[in-house]
Length: 424
Image 1: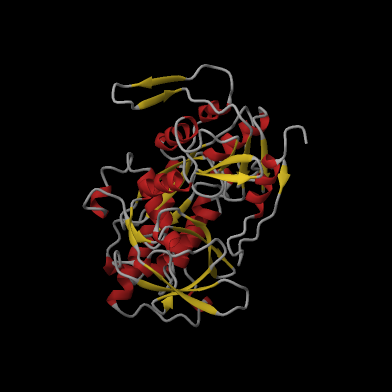
Image 2: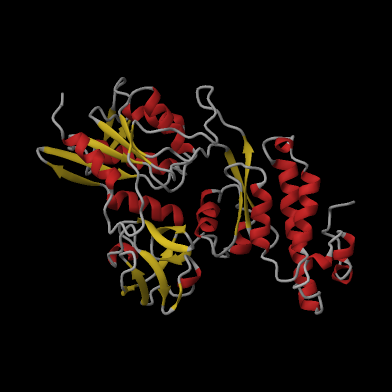
């Protein structure tokens, strides 16, 4: 059977269930396609699924598609796509999950990851971006939090310093229930509400009372947001006689993040710290292996100073103690850094095993405006393949974020380690 359905007209969509071999009796509760609108939706769903299916066949990193019968898999999910009322996003992601690979998924405008990935891959997507972002700027309205869906409930997993959620004093572990009385959604709850005050309903304790928090969403540009949050959140933590620097690198998808790290450690607010906590939990990867050179004490650091006093650091170094924080959300290029940090003995690693999500991905904007992230190259580090394995910390510290009320046992353990006198 020819699986290329792009040329199929809506007039033929009524016969689609027969053509694709759907056993309608297997879905007695499902109404038949009875209106032109339903027919058009079914047609569009099948076209979209076929577009994703074809892209995988032509671009997935393994030409053997991991031994899967991709033809049969496509037919099975196309049949599901012909059912009126089917959730095509879920169907596509179930099909992609058959590949069992990281850096592979389908995202829509209701997913924060859609905007993050569109901005990360804006260079390769530059021809198609103006169709969906006429201003040429990838942005959306939000409050500056990372969330995690656990048992059907949304919990704050990260608060970005300098953004509305931090100003409203949201903390890791808060359950996000509603916005202006409607169920919370990470993107759509704030759609077209930039600069307008909204009421966010949260719960801070399991089984506890809800409370309302006033917050004002703003327009967010993902890469700028993560860089600003990194700069805003960098701070000195006083622990006994020790001054411990702390920096959370939310994303490594641009060289600018590493440049900022070097500036913070050599001429910025962390330069006088006695030790460092380097937080690579959650967020996005994209890091290059050479970023670890900042912790390699060998080699000179050069400082350029212009006549107006502005300094520029070349080959900046951190030659003091450092602890690396990782968790299940540490992924991709951050895992390359974690592997090297551990193997070459730059310091201790605290937290939980990393995600084991280390393939090279590429983003594609689809005909409906959706975004496909697809693994297009395999990756090994020093000959080792981390995909599906991840990197284990030296010191494992579990962290259930639900109703954590801002506590962070992983960070607390790192502080304790660095606060001890040398030799303890």
